[in-house]
Length: 234
Image (tube, rainbow, N blue to C red; front, side):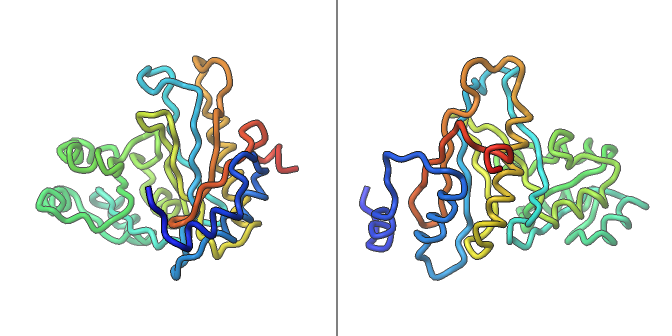
């Protein structure tokens, strides 16, 4: 695979054989981000679990203290007083059967979907559309809830969902390069603390197998998997 000149120059700053501390890695990510736009910083964590087994799933959601740096568009499936509360909380679009029809017609201009429990009979029809995009509301992610207003506020504040993919890796954004090391580290630790806390009882051996961070267009930087989270940063 051929890389561009900027990527190649950035990669020279990284010792591929070294496992960095979280703070060192985030410093390097900022130095190696050469794009003309404010790149997103992403975390990739490989876990010692098997996602094929129900008792080894790792999934949840966490509010990043410094947000993601992204303007999050929230769609809410609710009616009556809950719909009004969602609108007042800042939802970008609120509806019930009409919103389901709009999405079935191809409209997808939102980043997070929230639903009140009584709406899931309608929303279930969108499983094949929202599921593959990771947009299906779920109780585990806190996006199926009677408190839709709170869910909207959290999504706008920087709540992200983490979940295993088929290769047992979690991929998550933790902010923008412009945040600086301190804010990125705070977000990183918050995410890793949540993942560590979500360790399944069925998981055996080393839980965090590997961890790396990278900007949108930059090279990956490996972090020592034995020294991640808030405790390791003290």
